[in-house]
Structure formats: structure tokens, C-alpha cells
Length: 122
Length: 113
Image 1 (cartoon, rainbow over the protein chains, first blue to last red):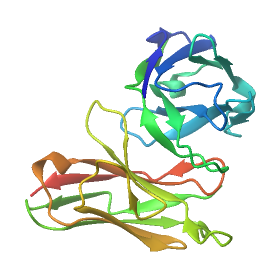
Image 2: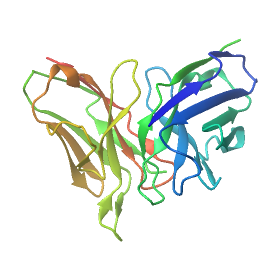
Image 3: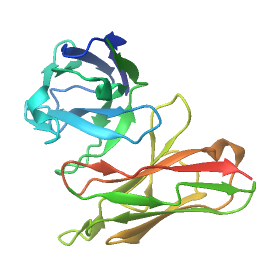
Image 4: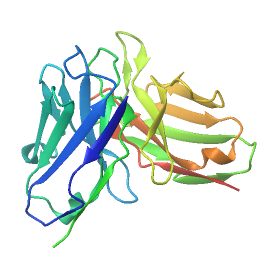
């Protein structure tokens, strides 16, 4: 299983950020599979952002839900995250990750992409 | 939200000695129906993504050396590195995944003394 994030490295405040996760080694058409997005500001801890399941069910961190949209393209093996109205505090390394197949509600990620650093600055 | 707090923030241990990191959750993350603790440990080296070491508080992920041991239940958990190796220098995070949103601790930096 591998995942790789792509997107802009620099975004202007108030713009919309769009990130793409391209993955291999699994399919988002398989029952119980899910992919999530997390981020890590420089020198700080990790924050979970959003998750999408094989059946298109979606979960969002309540603290950011109104700004986030997650979507999947099963045929391209990709998951896209959009974040509206970005601010310098959104500067972080953004990771996509595979949810562990534990067949329950819990959100644990066992495979991670290398991450992409996004800087929000005028 | 269930918050997890780690201690200490950093520690320096001699090669071959034991390193111990603690993690405390703001409420119990033991699911009584299956008697499992939804607590994981990650290792992160500079410039790398987090690596899953331990899940369900004490189960080592495939390929993780057995010098890494997770223990604890309810609200108090521990990651022990029994004999610190040079390649173990990293930041370690605990994560609760009992509730949504999952939350990570602030991290513990492990260095060589």
C-alpha cells in the first residue's frame, strides 16, 4: 500500500486549497476501506481532518467541518480534499492515510503518504 | 473531545537503557463491549510521516521490533523501549481512536544521552 499527496506548496490567504491523494495497493471500492486526511503544523502535533469510506460516507473534524470537503474518484484511485478560506494558521504538512481495516468505527491510520507542505502566505 | 496528554515532553536515554513515555486520556478509552483500549503509538523521524508502532494499547504492528512495548488500560498508558537503539531517536505520539475526532498527544522527543 502506498499513498502520495500532491497540490500547491504556496496558497494565498482566503483562497481555496485543493489536495489530491493518489494511492495504490488497495481499492476504495472494497467494503470497509477508507482514506483520511491529517495535517501537522511545523513543530506541532497531528490533527485529523476528514475521512471518506468506500460507500462514500464521509466524516469531518467538527472544528473544521464547514471549510472541508472530501471526495473520491474510485476509477482513478484518488481522494481529493478541499479547504476553503485558508489562513496562515493552516500552514502545515498535509498527509493522506489508509484507515486500518479494523471493521469498526474507530479511526486509526496504518499507512501514510510522505506528506506535502503547504504554506499559506500573502 | 477526548484529549490525550503525554509526559515527559522530552527525554534523553543512554544507548541500551530503557525509555518510558506516558500517555493519559481525559476519559476512559476502554470499550467495555470488547474489552479493548483504543490507544495507538506512533514514531516520527525528521522529515518522515508517522509510523504506526502499537495499536489497541499493546499490539505491535507487523515489523516493529519487540523492544517496543505498549501497556495500560482505561486512561493511563505507557510506551516502553526496553533497550534504546540509535535508530529509535524520534518523536513519539500517542493517539486515542475511541472517539471521533481522534486526538494525538503533543509528542515526546527521545534523544540519546
